Image 1 (cartoon, rainbow, N blue to C red):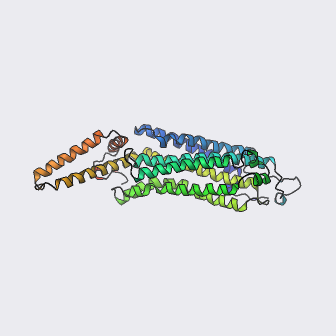
Image 2: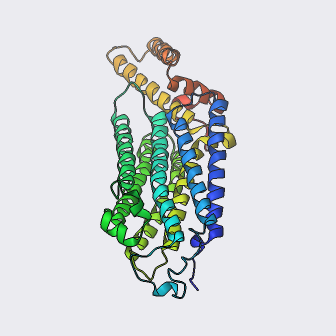
Image 3: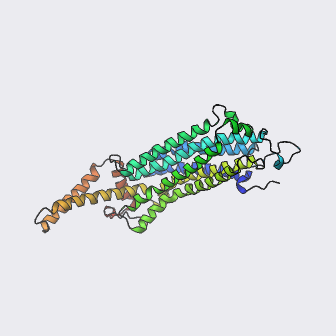
Length: 380
């Protein structure tokens, strides 16, 4: 009897196919509810979770269909009635179960690529909402835009690479192994490239916000708290690493006739479901903190950016005052303070961008008077 790992069993496959899409549905719904409650606009990082959710639901439906037809979650039946599973070796033979599992695998890989692309883009647009000013071309703005372009190209490239892996002879993917070998590109290399590039892009996306957070004028405990929020993306990163490990194992096995093809495909698709499901859930977690903490990380970051802008204005005022010979007198100091206060108020009133709105929103939610000094009144 074939020994099955838990991730190869029908029950665990069905559980992943049901639980993760349901969690993602709830998380995406709460994300939009949170935006409405925060009274902030719904931007690209929010909208792109909708196609991601639809794709994750499709992945779950594919797994359920495969299990229902015994193409996934069950050992492959012998190709010949009186021959044991481990004695079959012809590369020209197949059976309905292998055909079903291979068809689902082909559709599943392309769907998961699109889902992963949307999830990665959601993270990147979320970073831009927090750290980038639309009218300023700094390193952060340029780098995040470059990463967005890379992810779009990555998604399109691997989608069409899998779609036309066998040219226009699509049925070769789910035909006998010999057809896959002779009529298609080296699919194991394509799968390996996908897994490695997926891991690398996830690693970059997880690291992006950390140096930006540690440049802020916050105390170390608060920097750690903000970093922890962004590191929730490590959930998806861990799933990506796990999937890459199992992909390497499957590639090593290759077309070994003694290996159970249906169980190997089940293993691949199970971990793909885990990565996509957890990735979308992790993309929503930072926004959902508002429901439990009473503040949003976006508003806090916007407040800090406003504080940094005000501090920059103070520095300019301070340098200008040093040119006045009697700037040390009380009268001069009072005049400088009045100028600074007027400049600060003008900055906030004239700034009609989302940053100005988030500043006021954060001030109202935190009730803190020390935002202006870089202490946003949270993570105590």
